[in-house]
Length: 144
Image (cartoon, rainbow, N blue to C red; front, side, top):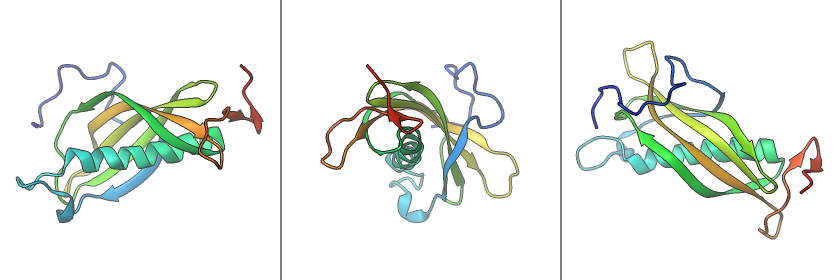
């Protein structure tokens, strides 16, 4: 991973995060690989947690991850980086919610965040038995 701009950067990827702040955490030494960099899987899990929080608010229910699309690891995350995940609603289906997630890192001794990872995550609304259920909008299930 390098800190050069990605040639396939999303057209709306600007200098500022877009969407709602879902989660913020600090990358710690326990989250590193053998090279001392933060595991991509750790970052993916932080994004999934943040996206799950966002999707559950939209669906007004428990949600589970069913798909991750268009995931792009753009820049490395290092120990001590403050990682923030932002979510934007992409689509509401009958039982699913798709969320655009961006992970931004603020490096130590720097004042501006940089986009490190982004992707689309899809979650399904589930009932207490774990079965898919219609997404509720304004307290009512969305009709077919």
